[in-house]
Figure 1 (cartoon, rainbow over the protein chains, first blue to last red):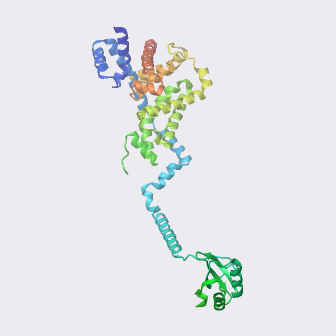
Figure 2: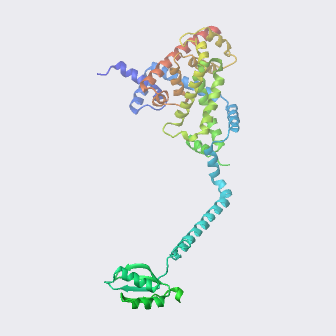
Figure 3: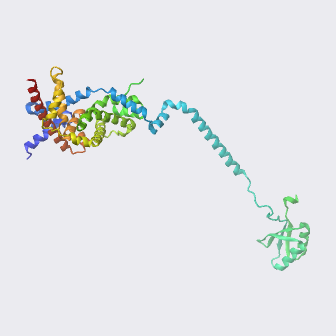
Length: 209
Length: 205
């Protein structure tokens, strides 16, 4: 069973909240009844109201102008915080001032991007070319020869020496070699007469045209 | 010129965008309460209490101006502002600690010589109304409460109609403790004021 003295004490402790409008509905109704019927409670509530009135009157009697002037003086002396300066720059009224700069910046970005796109397109159209250092160019073949399968290396060497021709590349499939003949026509004739060649033909080169 | 809002949160938002008129409005609306609270808090600083309290008040609003969005709305604006004030006042009390130790000889229960000397400076019944005298007496007794946390609890309760829960949050104490402080604080204050009336009655007879 709850001690009635404890209950009374707890209710009395809730009086400040009741007077400030923060008490629960249950507490409020019980305290209201106490205030109505018990002079001691009423005196306590009146006393608390006196305290509040004294403090409120003290606050309302204070002049704010001197303090505000001092606060303004302090603000004038200090540099505004960086974020406040930034906000001030970005605030709506200042946008028209920024407009020319913004438009110029955007236009510059568009021009640069267009130039970059044009550069990429030019690169795609460029022909793939063989690149080499001067003096190291590969010789151009002007003869195509198919040696007989049974021809030995020495027989082939002899035939090439007699034709004054060198191997550019080979052997390719089918015993085919591409040759660089000093005199393509004479080399062709010499190779055909060598007896170790099945087929021989001239290769059309841009220089020959 | 557009009218300024009166809601503290709206004033703070305007301050964040650099509107100094919002700071002025906030100062006019709230600085008296901050000052009274600071004065009561700084009672221990003796004769300098009012000057230091004024300084604390300006410091509080200067801080609010510098970072208005520090208020996140989780507690009532008054609770937040008075917490800032309390912290600054405590800093000042620590700074004036040595002097406090020297001057803190006043007993809330006792009606000592310094109290009598102060009473000599009170305006007489002809010069001031009974209401003003009573108000001054209550404030004097409030300053003389021996337990500063009882004084602070009563001040917070009276200044901004704060609930016990709000006061507990500011004082970082359980609600039961705050209730006890309010109960004993007003009891001690009442005893003090009763002695004051007895003394005053004696003087004017």
